[in-house]
Image (cartoon, rainbow, N blue to C red; front, side):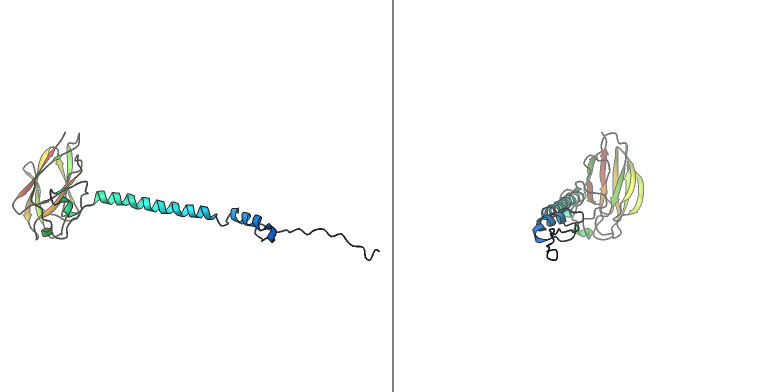
Length: 208
């Protein structure tokens, strides 16, 4: 019978876009596409590894910075015994007041690196900027007179070899204390000293 002729139905297919959720039986394939598609959520394992990577990089950077600042800064306790700040930079401030420094006046011999005929002397106040004044002599001749010393180093050119004297002129309070450094020295040290009024510290600069 034509009126009752059954039409042959074709099985339905699902047409969906890459971002449209498919039927349950295709759920696994759908999740895989979501995971690997551009802009999709990265795999949990990769997220975890990425997190660990940045934690490791942060820890490494912190360690490097610690080593750097440990080399370039110091404490008064580290230099009080002999006045030598190993590897310290010019301008290092170690004390709040001069009378807390507890340094005894000393003379030093400083060896310079090879083939150096001139150098610089950097001098600064490593404690309070309280008005300390010094005079600088080189080989018995005044190089600079009545120099006020501050945290910012004052710079002078000196010959190598030579004998440099730092003469105490005025005590701003608590004693005249200062730091000095001669770039080009074999040891790359800074020297922390005290110069009572009317007396001098000597630095014998030798070449090779």
